[in-house]
Structures are given as structure tokens and as C-alpha cells.
Length: 253
Ligand SMILES: [Zn+2]
Image 1: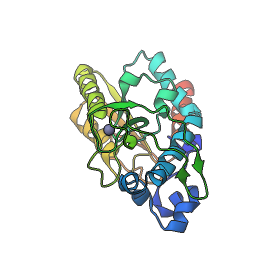
Image 2: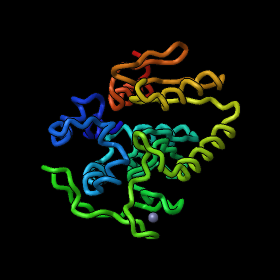
Image 3: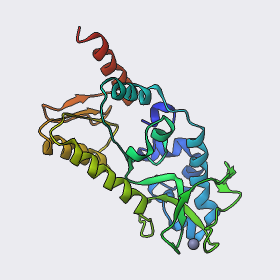
């Protein structure tokens, strides 16, 4: 979903390094850059990556596909829930209800203490300037309780101090949503969920075989395979959503 709004694709070292040439010079992969160790060893460097992304996601306008799905929900008076591994907050920005979103890896728009000294998670209202040559931040967001370094409430690689409480509350709401779904028909629209970190893919497959009335529509340009009766679309998210929308309006020609 993010890529179609113009956000960089972190898939593979080449994709990541194209988006962030300074990390190519340092030989740092995405998994190595997205690591809480930087906040401990060199917070200005850790915040360079996450501060840059915070600014990027704040500046990004969600593409039309977000609106297409909202229109389906409204037109069908459907209930909905968003489950995403993106940390960019684009669903909230596109007008989806914050109470109907599960961010499995957390959100860049929320912070926590690095230690952490308390279970507090608070909104990210920091203004951070980044030097694009060095990828270093000009200031370090602080924890309001202990005055130490704060970090985004995002599950990073090799991360033992991520606070799961906010995501856990979202997960509880998602569980209640599924309980309430009962025998209703469910359309699971899965977009760009890969096999490398399969959380999202596994979730839609589970819904597909646990709920008799659920159909999964897998939209994926590289790994679209799914067993019938579920549906596979080998294209980008926006392209797939537009095509489904066209079929809903004009029918199969
Ligand atoms: Zn603290």
C-alpha cells in the first residue's frame, strides 16, 4: 500500500539502499538499520533513520486505493478492520477509524522510553531535522519520565524492549471484531503481504480456512499464489483495487 503512495520499498538490500544511499556506503542492511542497538550506542544515528521516516510518512498523501475501500465499506454498510504490518500510519491518515486498526509491528507515530522505565506509550509530536549526508538527527527525543532517550514504539529486529501494550489493545479489538462477525460473509483483502515476514499472510490464510464464509483476495505482484476458492491478483495494490472497483461497477465483460 505504501509503495503506491510513493513510499520506498525496503524489499532486498538494493531497494533499501536505493532509498537510503548513506546506508549503502556504510554497508547497513534494512534489518541492521532498523535495530534498537543504534538508539543505545548512538541515538543521533538511530533517530536519523526513524526521524527521516517520521517526516516522510507525515508528508505522504495516501493514494486513491484507501478511498476505494472506504467507498465499498460505506456502500455495503459493511463492518471492517484493518490489519497492517506497516508502521507509517497511512490508514489513519486516509480516514480509517483508529479503533479499527491493528498495527502488528507498532507505529512510528508513537514513542516509548528506550529502557523502558515505564509502560508509557505516547504520541510522537517531535520535530526532527536529519542531515541527509550522515543520516544523523539534530535532536534526540527524550522520555518525559526519566529524561533518557526515547524510541519509536515499533517492533525492530533483535528487539527485546519493544512495549507491546498498544498493539495488544488493538489485537483485543480485532479479536472482538472477529467474534462479532459470526456467520457473516467476510472479504479479506490482502495487499502486498510477502512470505519473508509472513505475519499478515498467515493471518489472512487463517481467516480463509477458519471462517466458512470468508474469501481471501490476495493482491501481490510477486507472490500472488493462493488456493481456490480464494482469489489471486498478480499486481500492485492500487492497480488491483481499481480493477475490483471497475468490476463492481461494470461487471465482468
Ligand atoms: Zn524513561
